[in-house]
Amino acid sequence: MVDFSPARVEKIIKECGWFYFGKDKTICIGDNTVIDSYATTGTLYAPCDSCYKGLIFWDYSEEKLEKFVELLDNVGYTTVGKLNKGVVVFYFNDKETVKKFTDNLKEEMKKIELDGRVDWQRSCKKHRDLRPELWEDNKTFVGKILEDAY
Image (cartoon, rainbow, N blue to C red; front, side):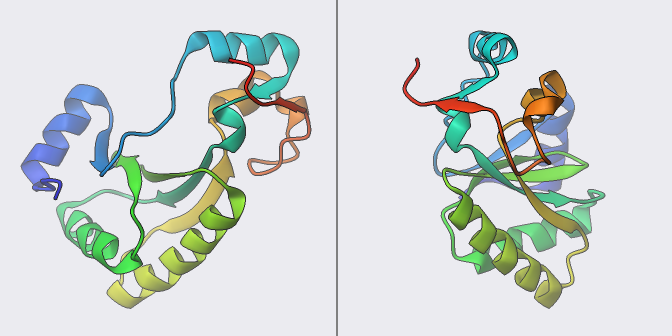
């Protein structure tokens, strides 16, 4: 189990920008080569083409962190993600799973009275910022997808 003590979480967020949780690490390679190729070709390469993120937009507090830990126990998913003082990010590999997860997340948050706005998106915001013309919205990529390019 991850140590979610408030002092530890806040220290790591301050030092690294994000506090990571879950059993596995994300498959995000955060590699500039992939981003540069995308910027040039407009092609969404693997693993970015199968990256879906469940999101909770929140105003972090110790009380909300305690409720968040309870939420993780309640959602019944093996979750991998990260959080900071403005957003919680859960990583998934397909659209149907992230949609089911966020629907369940909304219900579970209501039950434990955890305030926050739930949404989901496809891939990184970097992609939408670099080539906004290739996106209908934060969920719908209309450009070219080329799997196994790397």
